[in-house]
Length: 148
Image 1 (cartoon, rainbow, N blue to C red):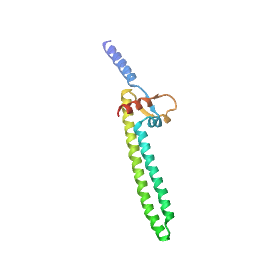
Image 2: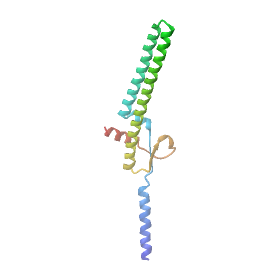
Image 3: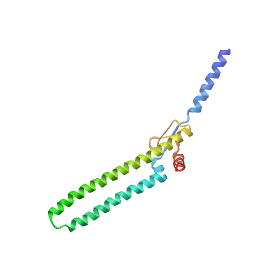
Image 4: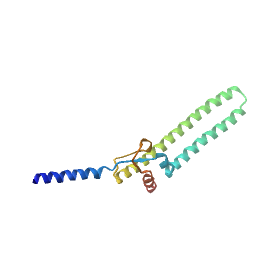
């Protein structure tokens, strides 16, 4: 009988422990988080500014091209402009990738903190949840804003 009581207590503890750790799945709306994260917004503005610089560069080069009078000058101008444009576009893509990686890593860090604090099993994107789960987008946004 003594062993049965111990076994019953052990089973009850295991059952209670399993329930205590079965917290569930959280989900986030990544776009909502980006829209409410100042670092993401400043990154978008910086990328947009660089893209506008490239557009202005092309407008200026088009004006210069029209002012050229010989086919040879135009050909040389096209070649140098193409090289300059390629370098500017590569720099823009590099900046965009760096900013996206920075924003993503910060959001992931904040989501990991929320995962631990809320005792969740996982956090996924809201588009993979059909029914259930807990929206933790606002908690992630709070963590990001607090981490300034």
